[in-house]
Image (cartoon, rainbow, N blue to C red; front, top):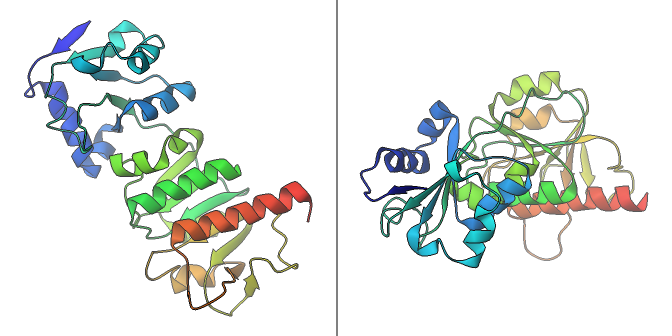
Length: 264
């Protein structure tokens, strides 16, 4: 089994760049998974990593050995103590790191359920939306050019493995997407134009739908909102005016799932 003893190793330098730079991730079509949980989720999706880097002090742990049994030996590299900690974004940097290729999501679909994110910039919000999408059975994710990098370590940690269950399309021209998408488009908004309450009996969520969720502060842009089939408002009691975008997406997706499961 290969062993790295120096932080100046070329492969560790590559890992550091992949962790730090969205541009580098795009150029090399790769990213880094930090920690055992994400690697486990990756393997559960029947994907094979390029290389797994294991701190020597983690090697004999039961959790690590269970992972190693699922990997060919030539995909495993041991790293001497302290080297990975210098490049990790985790508080406990002495964790397994996995170098993986970005999956090919294929061409954008012109119909069917999907989630569209416009200028959503918080990593935690994007990761949570991906988790909710996976849980609600919506596999197509479309991110506009203004969104945070969906393959950054922060979004990956927040998504907790949901990335590997979804088809993720990033840096999409949303105006062009809307011209090609043939199904119903619902945008969350506070406006009254073409407006439904989420729980309105006339809002049938059993049909295929593209949900559009916008920027944390500004919401969906007027341009994209104007191209939606309708806008949807989540009713709230009290003085609260709006929900966090990740919470709003979760509420909408699970109301959709409730209708489909119950037939209402």
